[in-house]
Image (tube, rainbow, N blue to C red; front, side, top):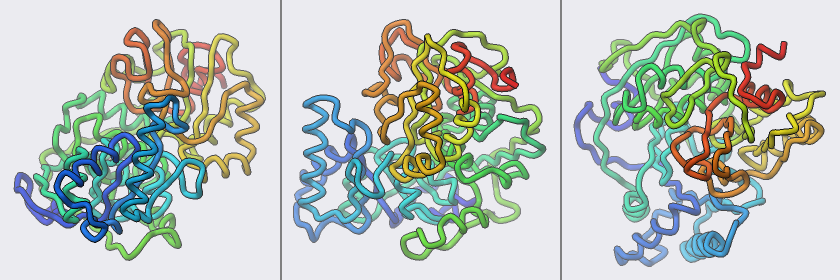
Length: 415
């Protein structure tokens, strides 16, 4: 009996299938090479690109940090104009932000859809019941030309989380707990599906965090069956029609893994791998920087959690705290709710949406020997800067508590 991935791809695990894709997303790093390959194929006519399926987002090196990044952004801008790409998102404009947040906020992601993106964290849209996955720029170019792409249908793992979550335990802790259990290769080229009472209670934001980090276990996709929370979010937002897809009751899963939520605590992934996990309460590591943002944890719900902890307090004198909302809309909502004021009064630095620091590009690059507690998704060697720096991954509550204390801290210690 088919799983969600098998139904959307219309094939059985292990089969090679060719499918029509709904959308192709590229950003300022991957978009230029994709358009270059497209033109190398001899397809330079505006009539030969499936422009209605192409979404272009400026987000990684914006605002441009140097001449090279400015030239890259300019080249992408010129391609978008040349091919009359309607779905183009420029820095500061309406709908702008980090690419994966844009795809969700602007109604491109929806249940049952097949979406590819030239960015590994495209799997985020599985939180809405889509099959979404990262591809290379060459594959993106092929899909731009044909509207189609081939896939090997992945086997599916089923993750079931039941019970009650403890205070300050979020979606980030659930996925870190799972990755710590199965390792960064535990879902290699597999689709993950998430079920259970805990998943059903989670906000859409927390679900996106879980799907976002599925790739950190090697997964091709991380899918959560859509429910009323998803349908409510999409009402008046989604582009076009969509049809939810669910696994059959007796879906053929490669394996089923069950977890008791009461055993999941605020969790930190230590350098240099997302599976090097430990309870935050077991660490006493001094930090130089605290980072709140990214496609993983830069949504309004994440900012609210951190602001609640920071309200009336100050960031430690030895720590820099950087807050980056995931989109212009999130920034505007945070302003309206007074969250930005709380961050500023706590002595945090706040800026508009960008991927910059997450990939060690700009707006938060680490020097040699510096440590950062971060809500991002990767902590490989040199990920956020110098090869001798260290990145610790955690949820927004842990990041905020750590910023106050100057060391990695379980937020329950502040109670």
